[in-house]
Image 1 (spheres, rainbow, N blue to C red):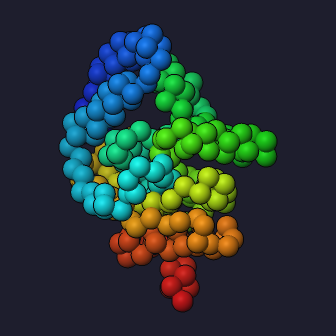
Image 2 (cartoon, helix red, strand yellow; image 1 turned 90 degrees about the vertical axis):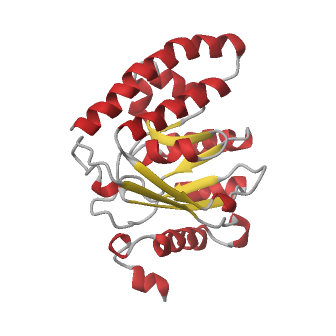
Image 3 (spheres, rainbow, N blue to C red; image 1 turned 45 degrees about the horizontal axis):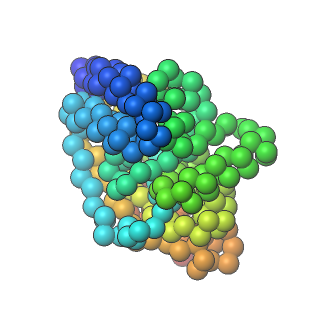
Length: 244
C-alpha cells in the first residue's frame, strides 16, 4: 500500500495547490492551457512517485496538426493517469459522470472539456455525450476513449460499445488504437493497492473512419489492431476467430 500512499499524497498535495491557484487564474485569463499542463504534470508525478515505470512507443503514428480519437483497451484504474499525460497537446476524456462531483478536480475537468457519461443512460443523454465529445474534437482537442465501456474483468480485450465509433464517423477524426498492458497486475479490480511494475503503451498506426463503409467494419478494424498488439494472455477469447 506504500505505493498507493505516495501516489495519493502527490495528488492531494500538488493537485490541491494546482487547483487553488490554477482555477482562479484560469477563470481570470479565460485559458485553461497552463492549468491543463500543470494537471498533467501532477498526474504523471503521482504515477512516477508510486514507482510505476512507463514504456511507450508509436508517437510517429500520430498525425501532425489533427485532432485524433485515441481508443484504448482498459484493464485498470491506472490506465488513465498513466496514458493521458503522455498524449501530445490537450486531450479530453469520456469518463463517469460521478467524477465530475469531486471538489476542485471536477471543476477543472469541466473547464478542460472532459465529457461526462452516465452508465446505462437514456438515449438522449448518450447523444449529448457524443455531441460534447465532437465539440471537443472540433475545438482542437484529442479524445481518449475506452470503447469497452468498463475495465476488463480478466485482462483480456472484451467487446466494444458502438458509441465511440459513431463519434469517429461523425467527426472523421483519425483513430489511434492504443494497446496498454502491465497495469492489470499493478492495481487489480476492487483493490486500491498498487504493485509498481512496467506499464507498456503502444500507439498504433492511425485508422481513417472514411475507409470503412459501416460502423461495424470500423469497430472490427480497431479491435483487431489492439488485439494484435496485446500479449497472448490479454488477447480476446475470440481472437483466432477475429484473425480469420
